[in-house]
Amino acid sequence: MLPAAGFAWPGQAFAQNVNFGINLSGGKEPVKIDADEMEMHDKDGMAILTGNVSVAQGDRILRAGKMIVYYNKTGAAEEAEEETRYGEKANKKAGMRQANSLGASGIDRLEVSDKVYIKNGRQIAVGDKGVFNAGNNIMVLTGAKIVLTDGDNVATGCKLTAHMDSGKAFLESCSSSQQKGRVSVIVNRGGQN
Image 1 (cartoon, rainbow, N blue to C red):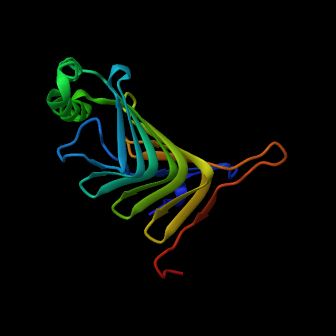
Image 2: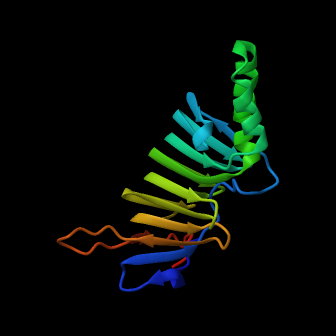
């Protein structure tokens, strides 16, 4: 539920408790990543996933058209890089090892774009672009219109900053150079008057 006490007046922002997102920096459940294509840039500690990108961990889901993963390199990644020097058979083995090193090495940052969708239980957030920083465990979702739903409750704005550790989120309004924007919230009281 979106608590009314979470409003930050005068209507330019809305704060609430949320608990959505993919915990790529820890957690007990495995993280499953799917995409139409994956391009590894191991020397740069980066992987680019494009086309129907889906990241799932338990009941948490993140979908986007494109995701760039920045990760820490490890000894396993360096071994894979070395194996690529020894022919096609070793290249296949090295490619698998590079993909495995992506998960084992730790993710620094994720950048997602092209219709971003995040779901955890009843909570759903939709936007145009997003950045997850594993260092501070903060996800920022931006776009022309961010829609955050929790069951029948709906909040809209243009920038959502979610602190994954505390579960707190801050939704900012859309504003232009000519007028101040406002956050819109619809709270369904479940049939109560």
